[in-house]
Amino acid sequence: MNAIFDNYRLLDTLSHEDEADFRVFLQDPDNLEDGLMAVAGLTLNLLENHWSEHKLMTILTSCDGIAPEMFERIVVGVILVMMRYDREIRHNQALLEDLQEVLTFAPELSFTALSNIARTTQIKRMEQFNRQLTQELMPLMNDRHSNEFYDIIRSRQSEMEHIAKMHLDQNFLIFREFYSTPFFRNVASNWLLPWNDKALFNVKEEDRNDVAGLLDLWPLCDSDKYALCQMYDSFKGIIKSQLSVDSLKEVGLDMPKNQIVTNGYVQQLYRFFRLSSHTQIRPFDLAFHLRDLMVYRLIVVGERAKESINQLLA
Image (cartoon, one colour):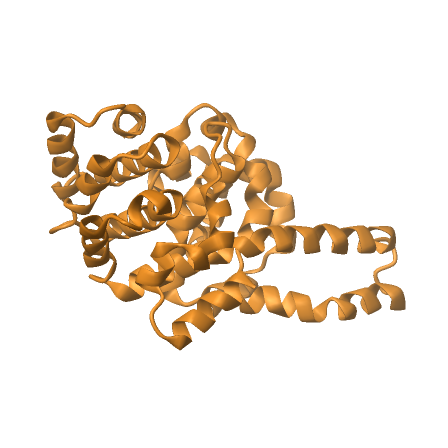
C-alpha cells in the first residue's frame, strides 16, 4: 500500500500504464485498501504539484462500479482539488460538466463532504477558545470548588454549547500530540491509511480489550485510531480517568452517522496538512473563501443549504 500511495503521489506524468493500473486498483474488490491509497496518492499529487486536467479526469472517469468508500474519498478529494484550482476550472465548461456529473451522482454525500470541509474553519477558533479557557482555569485547578472556578465555566457555557452543536472536531485537540511517533513521522502514507484491526497488535495484550472497546464507541477518524494504538500505553491513565463509556456513547449518538463516516477522511486529510512534516501546503485554508469558489455553486443549492454552510463559515 505504501508503494502504491508513493507512486501516485510522486509521479510527474501519468502514463497510459499508470492510468490503467489506477483503474485496476479501484475496481479490485479483493484489495480495497490498495484502491483507497491510490486515490489518496493521486489526490495529493494534484494538490501538492501543478495543475493537471489529465490527472483529474483520470479520477473522474474511474468512478463506475467502485466501492462506496472509494467514491467517498474521490468526492472529498475532488472538492479540495476544485478549491485549489478554482481559476483553472471555473471557465472550463466541459470539465465543469464532468465535475458536476460526479458531484451530483450522490448530492447528499457531496454536501456532507463540503460541510465537513467548511467545518474545519472553526478549528482555529476552537483552539483559541481552549487556550483561553485553560489560561483562566489553570490558577484555580487546586481549588475547583471555588465560586470563581464555576463562574468562569458558566461564562463560557454558550461557547461550549456552540462547539458541541456544530459537531466540531474536538478530537483534533486531544490527538494532535499523538502524531509525533515514528509511525507518522517516518511514513507519509500512514496518515491516510484506512483502518485495519491488525493495528491492535501494537497495543499491549492486557490493554487490547480496553482499546477495542474505545474504538467501538468513540467516533474517531482512522488516523486517530492508529494514533491511539501507538500512544495508548503512555496516556492510558489520563484516558481512563477522563473518558467514560457513557460519555463516549453520548458523543457517538449525538453525531449523525453520515457525518462520522464522511468526516473521517476529511479529518485524516486535515491532520496530514496541519500536523505532518511531509507536506508544505495548506489547502484547507481555502475553505475560508469557500463562498467565492465554483465548487460552492455546484454543491450548495437552495437557501437551506446556503444557510447551513454559511453557519459553519461564520
